[in-house]
Image 1: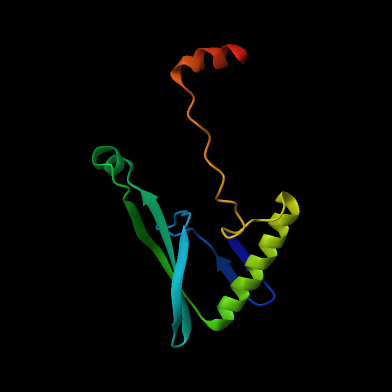
Image 2 (image 1 turned 90 degrees about the vertical axis):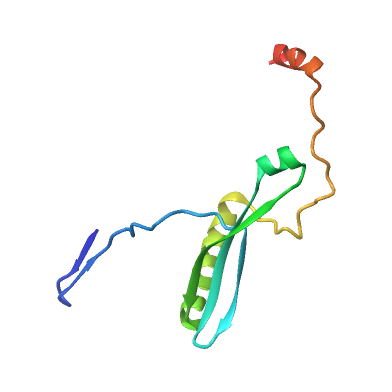
Amino acid sequence: MVKENESEGIVEVGRRSEYYREIVPTSIWGGVRPGYIETIAISSKTNAIEAMINGKTVIEHTEEICLKLTPQQTKSLIRWLLSQLKHYESLYGKTKTSEEVDMSTKPPEEVPYSRIDEILNEL
């Protein structure tokens, strides 16, 4: 991507880093440090094989990226995120936080093998 601003004699060139990747963090962690705010994106996943073999749920947490933002960059990011969230909710409705989700509902019961053919015939 090339963007030229002839009046100022500036040419901007953009490219995607060879390390670019998309992640879906499950949590954000960090804190205040002298001169910046540290933000670490963490992804978590369960180990299905460990659960199958040993009957234990193992959750693996991986630090994916650390962003070190100045307070000014942090305010700019918050402003942009709030704008994006407002637009998202205008399209898709209010977003529920984990505190607002009703965790008391039970998952659906398993369908017995004897009913599978019956259900398939109904489709």
